Image 1 (cartoon, rainbow, N blue to C red):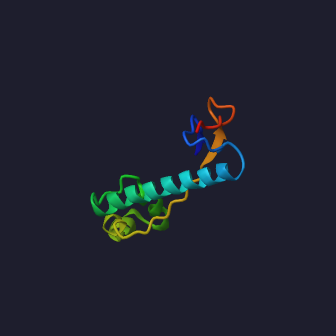
Image 2 (image 1 turned 135 degrees about the horizontal axis):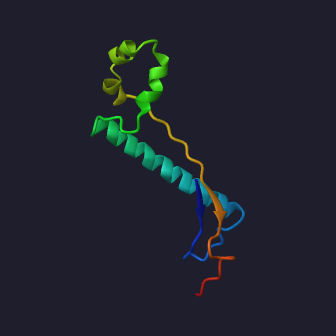
Length: 103
């Protein structure tokens, strides 16, 4: 994913350097956690593979009957899902650089 910095209320410079990397890691981790939480909700609460993960499992079975006999939807609720997102700040939007905050 890519994003823009539109404004920074803290007055800290996040446009370049280590703070930019910290912000990128934070956003990546945030989205990863939220996606995992959503997938877990579909597994436990809705018991429905709305993302179609089962479509990827079918290639491991020789026939359609073998896949049906595997009972994917029953197993879906127990599958461990790992999500990794990559986020980078592509530009700082309307800002040329962070203005110093008034104290």
